[in-house]
Amino acid sequence: MKQGLFATVLIIVAFAIAYVVYSYFLPGFITKGGPLVVLLIMLSIMVFTYVFERIFSLRKAQGKGSLTKFLKDVEDNLNNGDIKSAIEVCNKQRGSMANVIRNGLERYQEVLKDSHIQAEKYMSEVQRAIEEATMLETPLLEKNLIVLSTISSIATMVGLLGTVIGMIRAFQALAHAGAPDAIQLSIGISEALINTAGGLIAAITGIVAYNFFVNKVDGFTYMIDEATASIIAILNSRNFDSK
Image 1 (cartoon, rainbow, N blue to C red):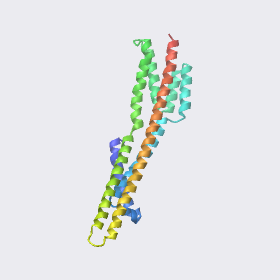
Image 2: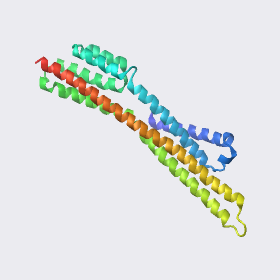
Image 3: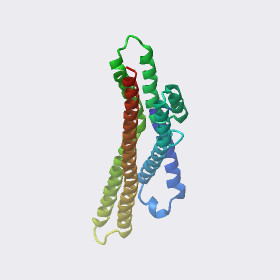
Image 4: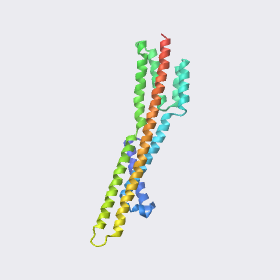
């Protein structure tokens, strides 16, 4: 499913669920927060949806087995001069790191067979193939992180809007001639505090998740860089020995 279609469907479904929850399942004191509570529930649902989507996607990006064992198997095969087996290990592992390394190894096989490419240019071709593969994989790792950050910011603003509206109602109750309208005053204060709490819950969850995933992606891309550097060093030494 394309990202735009996924976001559209998610907004519609999240709004429908939020409306049902607001209408039938929330305690009475929370519904005093007004219609903006529906929007806050919707944003919270979207945050948790993107959190689970990122968890699933990053696990998939790591591949089927241990990355440490995978890298060791690839290096062992390359040290033994068996590039074909190293590529098969990548095919079994799958994931972002395996895709990048496989792309570099396949390019290395191609340049070895191409008599028009000079030997000293072998590694530059492999490096270029690895960089291209990394550029394709990185956006997949970072996908929806900006959306998660944006939802967190919107939740903060919506909560603040509800706070302002609630305080306006509270001051309107105080502005009545004679004794203040205690009921309207309590409703206004309740609306302000409930929207503040709802906005903060959604925003804090989204911000924490965003920072967690950013660190996770940075660490993963660093591992890819280290792994590809090791692979290039092994290929370079074999290429050097073959001269």
